[in-house]
Amino acid sequence: MDLKELRKKEMSVLQTELAHQREELREMRFSVSNKQLKNLRVIRVVKKDIARILTVIKELIKK
Image 1 (cartoon, helix red, strand yellow):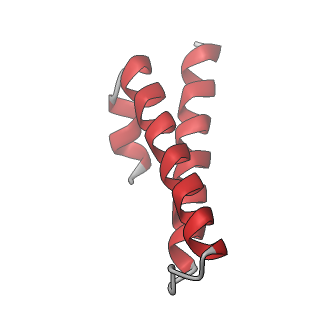
Image 2 (cartoon, rainbow, N blue to C red):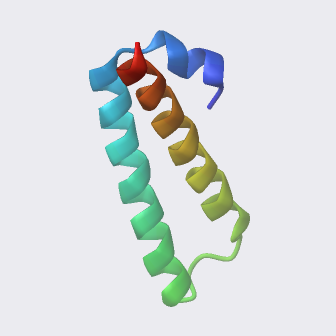
């Protein structure tokens, strides 16, 4: 996800996307514990996406 794309979205869309990303991260963690997920870098990518979404949400709240 690109920050420019995120800044164009509305708050409700961002919150929905945040919930989706958190659910995806939770599922990935279960996959790691069951040794089903081989590429652990995707967890890092999802965590960074969550951080980007939270940053944009906080920017919108400050406005």
